[in-house]
Amino acid sequence: MSRKLICISAYLLSAFMCLSQKTDWKFGINVTPAIAWTTASGDIEPGGSRFSFDLSVQAEKYFSERYAFYSGISFFRMAGQFKNNSISEISFKSGNAVLGIEEKATYAIQYLTIPVGLKLKTPQYGPFLYYFQGGLLPGIKVGGSIATKDEKHSLAKDVNLMTCAVQLSLGILYPTGDDTYIKTGVIFNRFFVDALSASNMKILPTSLGLQIGFIF
Image (cartoon, rainbow, N blue to C red; front, side):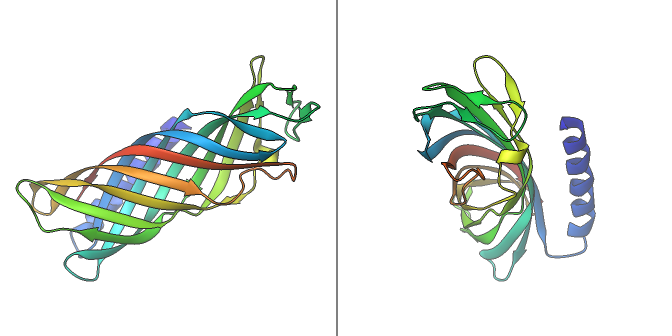
């Protein structure tokens, strides 16, 4: 999976670099390590935070000097932990996963997402520019897994196909040449679509990450 993602990202980046030489579009690639946690309800409760990450390619179309629409594509691995708070074991549709009473489980869900929103970029102050962007993060499930203290199982059949989050980001841009920048910022994602298909369990992931990228 990781090799395919690297190849796809490299191909998209090369294509965008060629396109950016002929248009007024701006393009970039971002890597975002993050900490994620879960709001849970029903037969489960939150169990702690976990490491997540996002690899994305983004396109920006400026309709004025400081304002732009943005979109792109990303591979988002969202992880978290929850605990069985019901009075019986919880069984999952995928594989033979069973969560005992008061037992904790760690989940990981992979999404292919398409961020879309608006971006504001400030004039340059000293060596830096500053930006704020906000929008939505709709996505489609690629896969999922659940791990207990004993074993790991697929979670693909228990995860809803579609998801969506509110996405907010704030950071700085450091110019490195003609219309090229190094980008660093914090990014917040709050999912508002239940990740699980079971009616007796609901999880809404949230993540806070450090986004590092390059814009050209």
